[in-house]
Length: 457
Image 1 (cartoon, rainbow, N blue to C red):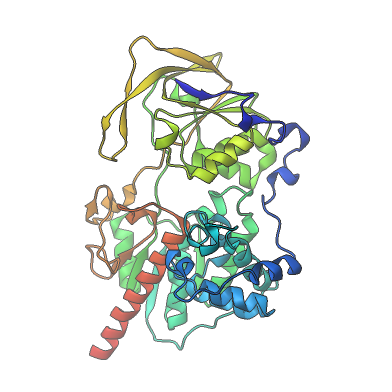
Image 2 (spheres, rainbow, N blue to C red):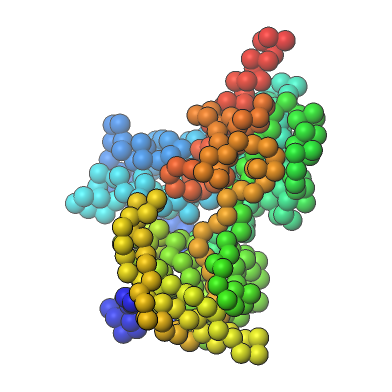
């Protein structure tokens, strides 16, 4: 077992103290404050406006970063926002949740010897300027007479719907939940993205004439057939499923990490993680769940069966969690959740050792005989990934590794059906910005196919 104990340099007096704040206070607001006009101007004027800028190439949606920053520097915020949103309709969300340290800011030429340009915060500054004022940057295209259904209103769905509406198609966006926005609305903690930001993007796509219908769930092949009969094309942005079962005794007492995050976002006062919480997993979602439990007053211990090196969370997220005072226990596998009178009392674990690489290329964790021990806690939260889209098989779609199989244009095995987002992410990492780019690719492919139909009609 490898752990980072309290009292280490990472759990210093400067770490966040949950006792200082209560739900609804600043502990639940965005981590970074908005830039002032002066801060944005100074930061924009640090940019070198590189020719063939590496930051642009590092952006999956290919935002023209030097151009939008130059426009901020000249006070043209509306023009800056338009440059961003033309390439990425969810520029407000991505400005907050993109791993900029790994992408645009990580590629900034100033990063080697100086501080990289704060591209994410500048992007947020420009996009918030127009969206907070309800300014619309785009108008619907000339009507084509074609209808497209988009199933799922997460980043991939909203991106596709917006681009299709700009092409002039009549778009219906179907969402099974009460609110549209998908992961941006329900699955990203308020410290990173407040719910209002996601809802402004929903309003922006509605302003393009997209018919957003909530409470509509696609459950089977018969319903897909109905959509295809009523529309010329269908785009599936289904996302992924629930956190999978661990298959250990006492699992009925374990909280779902995604549900915990949703509750933290919609009703933070309802969070009651107890005094000691164990979070199982070491991805970005696990860190989000741990962060909210910590800020709700719990002493939090993240348990992971591999080491720090194999964590799927970004390095900066790991360092953030350490600063929050969250503890990590590595090379540890939970094998039973202990309880008494229906209340959790601890997690029985076993030490692990790393063996040969598995299918993911990471060292396979193997239990060490006779190393069982108990971590005392009163709350257990699991965040060990998400199940693959079960609906895909029900719809009769061809799969690849459990994900929806698509070609380079994101066409599925079914005629007139496209798919994108996390549900097709068999290769590469799932992220909001990749889902946005999928929506753009699918919309371009659908538009080309519908135009071909017209020309051959």
